[in-house]
Amino acid sequence: MIDWPQIDTVFLDMDGTLLDLYFDNHFWLEHVPRRYAEYHGVTHDAARAHLAAHYARHSGTLNWYCVDFWSSELALDIVRLKEEVAHLIAVRPDVPAFLQAMRTSGRRVVVVTNAHPKSLDLKMRETRIDTYFSALISSHQVGLPKEHPDFWQGLQAIEPFDRHRTLFVDDSLPVLKSAQAYGIAQLLAVCNPDSRQPHKDCGDFMAIDSFAEVMPAA
Image 1 (spheres, rainbow, N blue to C red):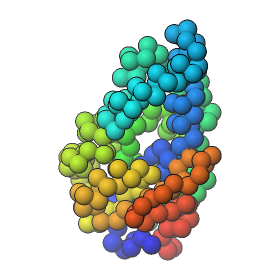
Image 2: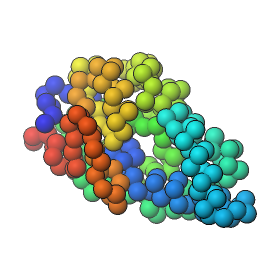
Image 3: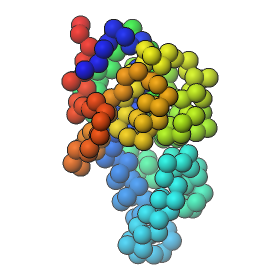
């Protein structure tokens, strides 16, 4: 499935790829509306409707991933709210063995995430998987979300890579399409990002349910 001899660099998304997306879905769709309703004195249904419209306006932009933006916009401490439910942050069960195999192989393994640095820090503190990686890069360092066609050239300035010898794994189809347009040689979609939701359609991208399906030969 993966032509491992042709891969020197492995870029891995975080939420929905390395970590179960259940935490993020629960946080934004349940926890934030609950706290917003309490703080602003509105019903839970009104809070959810208001937030859904707000989310839609900023979807796919850097603001959508920015905890500082949402803290200001909603008058809530988003980092503190994430800490309230941090016990729900979970590494996908197939991930540690894959990361160990990548580290043993000597390849450069890098987290490339849209998550804000504060979210990235929280999740690495909770999971302790940061020791597997050569680098941790947030799209906020580039100044563009991964969906943006210029993101990958911006990433080159921070983390130089040969697009012809790189594997990129993500659960977002818009992000994978952006990487494909840039010419990243090998792309892999994760089709079950949230363990409590049905599998999603990954279109024409090569797809996995578990990293066990693409473990390199010893």
